[in-house]
Image 1 (cartoon, rainbow, N blue to C red):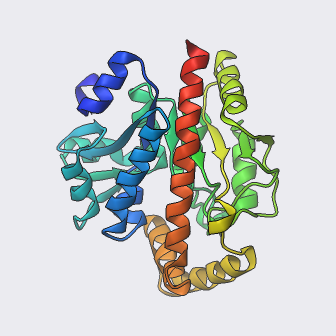
Image 2: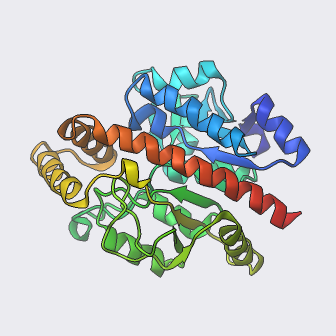
Length: 305
């Protein structure tokens, strides 16, 4: 296992000193945002985590290695290269063995963070049960990973393009706690509202760290969804985003878009339909999650000390 892991100097120093580390995915750079906003946002998010007292560890697969912490040149490479592979659990052996350039999804980032003994991971939104899954069986591998990999995932809920009631039902079946921060409702990525309640509400990093450490001390392996709603100033109205999502889903179906291509297609189409406002919201929610993720990592480190 260790032969696959390569740490940046910053992450290696943090590990040696026992400092809190926060994992970051790379699919948001390669597939989630256009260049150059993707690289700029990645750098800003990393700095937010540093300012919060933790060390950022953006994870990607480069030259047959799991890189935990990336250089500026590596961030540029991911953000400005055509054909970067989107890597989930099933893809890890292929991309590593064939030395391809790969960006990690939520599931793959959780696996790599766990291998590197990093317990907090910040992302935009998690994957989930896709609409129409009753016939397509299209369910994100993120949910299975949350069921058995012990990493806390700080997100703005599940992407609003998914079937949110079934996503929450699936997580409940697999014993994954969903904790909403500052409100009872489960947030839906672009919007603070989903019309659905999370399992629990906890309002600060101290309470979250106590909850998460208690879960793992009980021997209850698996992740925790820390659902952190987008700040109100950047949130989109639920009715507006719902209407645009329905339109984008219809267009995806008409054009035969399926599988891994669905999420990038929908996010790009929603960005077009909103005149770019959804990208601003996406950036704001990731930064907001980074602040909470850093605070949570610091608290978990203190709890473990």
